[in-house]
Length: 173
Image (tube, rainbow, N blue to C red; front, top):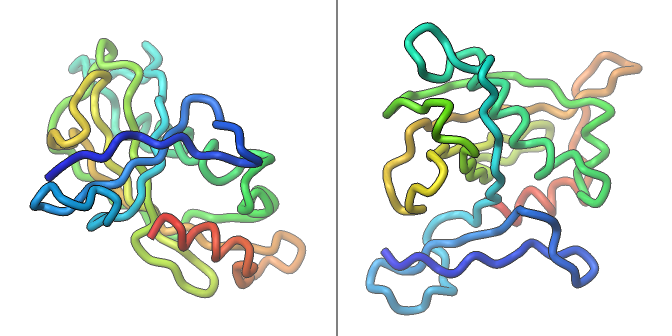
């Protein structure tokens, strides 16, 4: 597969920090604009020394925290259409598969995220985590999914995603 060049995510015509959007071209290498996989939001996440366990790789509980830290700039920053989820969004399900070890020296981790499933009140995020400097088409060391649900804190009930939230999330499907 041909890797299309990273395109900075733009809001109001200006790129946002260190985040970028990538898409994978067609298997023939032609038409790199025609994505066969979802657009992916990439961010870098620093590994702390305290994230390591006695075996010198990132501890499972810490990996879950690193995934959380990765989705914050994608979904919860002020300029995102999904910033309203900061007021209420709960983790409903989590799956993590380890395909390889990640260590402190692999920092900053490259975390790619996209939407696997989008429904009325929830959405599932897919993740691929690679060591710093790993090729984008190399096997990911960690594969994960999190199902997130919009939640109304005042009523203590799930709420429907707004049309603006759904439209933004649908861009990543």
